[in-house]
Length: 301
Image (cartoon, rainbow, N blue to C red; front, top):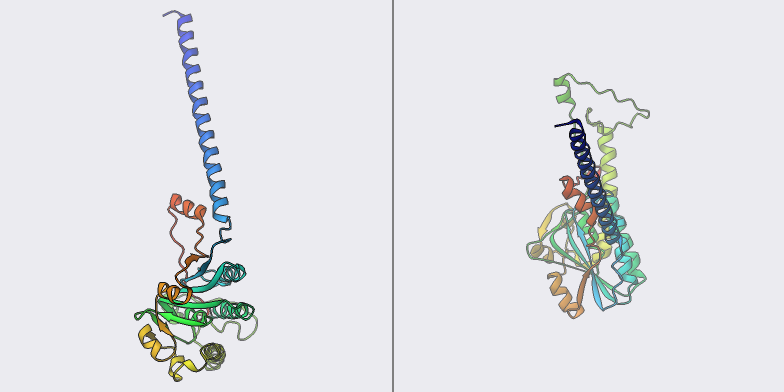
């Protein structure tokens, strides 16, 4: 093969490689553009407001999971939807659909207060339907309803307050690990897990919890008035829905559908806060990111 033929073959090979590279680059850019536009579309759909309902309906507000400022149930995730329901002229009433074991004392109290403020300015009824669990802060929120319903097997009550802390000092001593916390103020490290609580600190924390528990009790009594039978409902115990009706924590055994049929003549039920963040779910699926779970730190119901 002469030199010209070799050169020609080399040039043709280089041209083929360049064309192939250019083709792949165009495909890559087109794919990236399509993915980008798809993400923008999902962001738009996930952030769009779909709560402007024109037909007569009952608003369902879901109270699902732990209550906490960073958890699935908090003031920002609940109250705006309740306001939307009250402000919507085609909304005939509100059902709080509750599945919560409790959580933050503060968030529960604020949600309770805000719903009662909205009720004082509006004639619409708010009914609380406890499904699996309406305990502690979950029951606190339920008590903001005009009536409380549950299933016979629902878990209801647990009207109490707790503060969780650990003393891992003995274990650390065995491992030869010493705490080097530097603080100002003699009581700043009151809940330091490396040290035992002094009797003075225990007394202070008990007083703090009693004050919060007392406010919890006052709000439940105010909401349930003469319906509650006895003081033993405020000890932190919990009951089945069937038992809860006998002591005044629940008004009726009924499902959300029973409530709709009896009190709203079976009109359309619309869940106001079931909007999912489609983009987040897509990214979680792509990245195989584990679902976020929430615990409770600090003072909880």
